[in-house]
Amino acid sequence: MASVTFSKVTKEFGDVVAVNNLDIKIEDKEFLVLVGPSGCGKTTALRLLAGLEEITRGDILIGDRVVNDVSPKDRDIAMVFQSYALYPHMSVYDNMAFGLKLRKTPKDEIKRRVREAAEILGIETLLDRRPRQLSGGQRQRVAVGRAIVREPEVFLFDEPLSNLDAKLRVQTRAEISKLHTRLATTFIYVTHDQVEAMTMATRIAVLEEGILQQLDTPQNLYDHPANVFVAGFIGSPSMNTFEAKILQSNGKMMVDAGSFVVEVPDDRKETYAAYVNKPVIFGLRPEDIHDPSFAPPGILPAPIEARVDGTELMGNEIFVHFVSGDQSFTGRIDPRTSFRTGNTIQAVINMHNMHLFEIDGSHLAIR
Image 1 (spheres, rainbow, N blue to C red):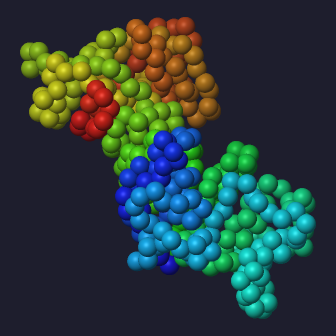
Image 2: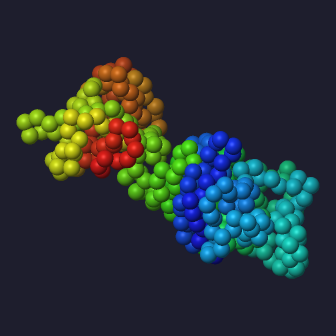
Image 3: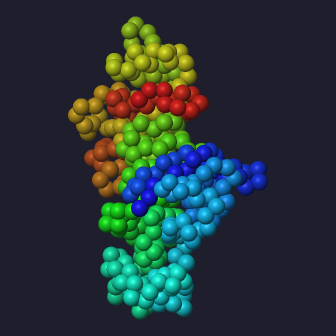
């Protein structure tokens, strides 16, 4: 097994910088997820590691070995693609065994590895079938099995669940997480779906325009986003943000968001003092907006008035879309609420969980 290191890695396609000075150390046996919107450089980073693209500058190490000039077949990695890439004329067994046959692995060893991988993935009864006889989830398992039989040091996954329906995605991501625990191998996983990233990763690397925005555990990314981009990308629905100003008068410190004004908690006043009379970005997650009748205990409530612009019933909660002045924002509200579309209501927000960012969003001012 091995660690993986991106050391100041840059990849340029002409004038386009797809990956920009990427520095990441992925520990042995870690499950790291690269996440970000389309075009952020996450798949390019994976292809650089796999040897499918050439590095413009920097080094990639697997363990202690620099692999910049090592051919893909000699890097001891296995990759699972978004498309299953199975040979339609071959059986499941032969698809899984094909790479080992090319390496002239002994037949008994091939049989052992294929059988073990099939058992791990629950596809032992499918080994004689052709890909056209399989469901999407079964084909994805075969593609994963083809990677497992190689017994690589590092597994790479490039959006492997994109072609599955919603229910099957949930099931399969749980299976991949269990597989990581069972194999105790380094997994590097690319997705644009932040829910996949949050539920599967040991750590998450958030990329935007080829630049690493933040590298941290899922919970720390959620609780302490480094900038406005991360705050908006991690979490569903995303964090609400408001252009605001910090004001101070008569011993009180307030956040003035234009359409509403709320008081800053006492334990933050000293640190926020540097931002008085300066523009900032005020951030609030949807779950920190409440119907006062069903607000949980222990919060620090601040009242705001807003009009309900629409609702989405989710069963265990309601997504309520509010408008206050020229600001639109979303709350995750207790389903017992009486908030209805068109009503002007009083809500409360939990100021214990407020976020504050520099006006340019470059870094977190205080959390």
